[in-house]
Length: 114
Image 1 (cartoon, rainbow, N blue to C red):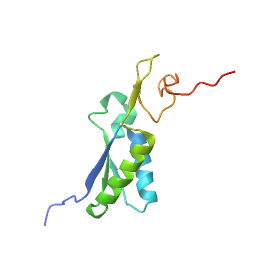
Image 2 (image 1 turned 60 degrees about the vertical axis):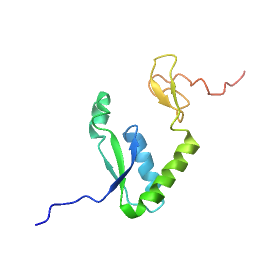
Image 3 (image 1 turned 45 degrees about the vertical axis):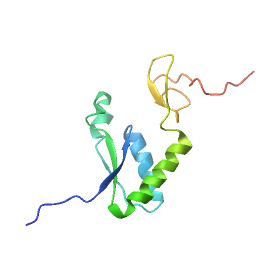
C-alpha cells in the first residue's frame, strides 16, 4: 500500500481564520476548490496564531489562478498595509476602518463634520 501523498499547494497564509474564510469564499466563487488548514486553535486561543495559522490550499491545476485572485483582492483591500491603534496598541489591517479590539477609528478614516 502506497502512503498518502498530499498534492495540494498552499497559496496563502492568512492573518487569521476570518481572513482565511474570506479568501476561501473568493476562490470558491470562482469555481476553485479550497481547503483551509490550521486556525482551529487560534479561534480558541488568540495568542497561538503562529502555531496554528490558517493556510489556504488548492490543487496544482488551480495554483496560478488562485494566486492571481488573491493578489487582486490584496491590492483592492490593501491587506498588506497595517495600522496600529492609538488607543489600545492593537495591530489592524487597512481593511479595518476601526480597531477590531476597541473600535477606535483608524487614522485614515475620513471624519464627518457636524
